[in-house]
Image (cartoon, rainbow, N blue to C red; front, side, top):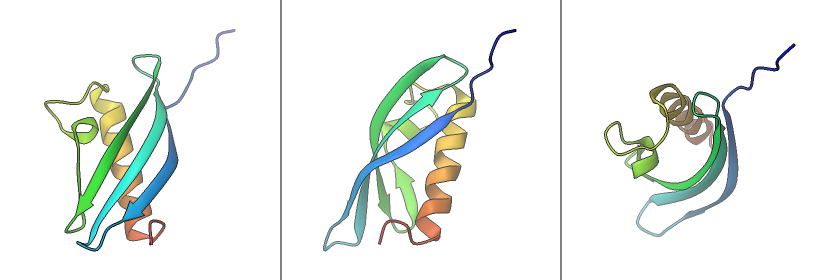
Length: 82
């Protein structure tokens, strides 16, 4: 019986600057591409920016990119990066 992996996201570190920008270092696993990833996302005006979540520049599968973006937004709005 084969074991099916799921997407995973881990917060490595984060910092908020004096300019109301929050930088979040992440690691994770893309279950579609079956590989680990790492990167950084910048939150500015409550929106995530960075190649890892950009629809055209991300090296993640579309499903994993969406998963990462949604999880980060949920954590951000829950105040986990304060």
